[in-house]
Image 1 (cartoon, rainbow, N blue to C red):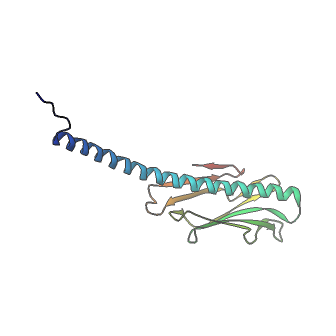
Image 2 (image 1 turned 180 degrees about the vertical axis):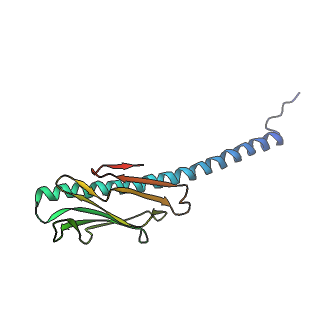
Image 3 (image 1 turned 90 degrees about the vertical axis):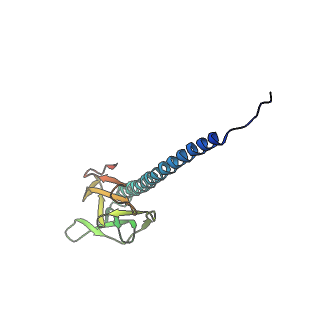
Length: 161
């Protein structure tokens, strides 16, 4: 008797079906992971810029100690940008006079800020925060489901949510 090698047509069809199902599940899973990765990356970048503004506020106080009272982090949703600006004291000696930006950053084109733009001011020497809040970002194609947040507390702590 002679033995035949190879697979039958039914075995090949079953194997192809299993491979197609596994590949489709992998593609769907990788798209969701890519969305979470994009949001996480942007949240980390924003957190880094917030830490930079906080650091500049402390450095400025130590080196100049005069007119600059802190640094502001501002974001603008329609432009999809965020900036760091020095803050000076106004006539009443309040730390509210935000100057033009010294550094500007752009969001990933697939990410947007949720809500209107706003300003967070890190004041020296005690590093208090004027206008503490949560900065919300979301994916443009699905803003209800894919969101991330960065909370800035009154004490200057920055927490990713």
